[in-house]
Image (cartoon, rainbow, N blue to C red; front, side, top):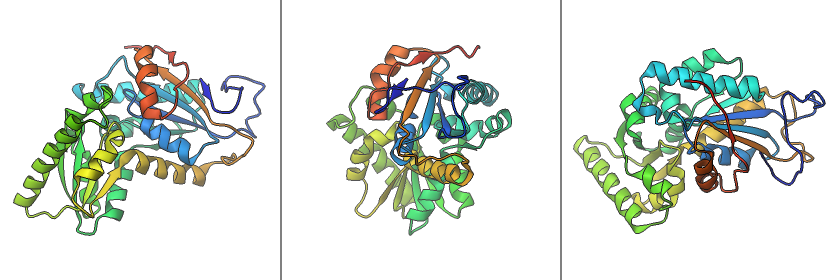
Length: 294
């Protein structure tokens, strides 16, 4: 557990805790640790909240699993955060789970649940003047066409592309590397060419993977002048803040409270601790190993 500027921690089963005065606990879930970019954006906006982050690293990648299996895994993770860690709000910082299992998660827990796809589409709608947007994501997210559907429901024309090379480049730490910049340029050129063939005039690029915020500077350098880059992690965090502010019964702006972060993984805690700080922008603290079953 990482406590920023505070020597105390939190334990949802500690009977000495005064739950009426404590800020709410926000659960954040991802199949890996890319969702730490969403947690980072949440902390920037709600620095006095308590956070429980779970990366289901033993069972990734979710994209290679069936919808039924993804729904089961995601529901188990959500229940752990709510039942074991006392989460009162859940942010699903996983594009695959948001695309394929959001309904199952909402049915599994009695707290508000927010995914990353709808907020990203809302941000694209607000940013685009032409109504044409580009979406880049992983293979699984693109194959789900969740962003395409969300954009279309808002009157936007969207073109999706899977960019499978970007996640390993991020995890290698090549977030400001000429090779990564070249790969991005190639992907975007392919997208722009296809957009031209379809008569589209895209002015907005949606980063539909929680790894991609670490490449935002490279994307902003690669897009055409005037084009907007939508960070789905930032969009999801902003939507979560609005949801939490509207429903919270406890103070989330108590200046006496401190940011408290508790991180869990179902496997590879050493890798989580080593790479997680890149995504979170600060040390993750000691990552706790949990077993959610098969």
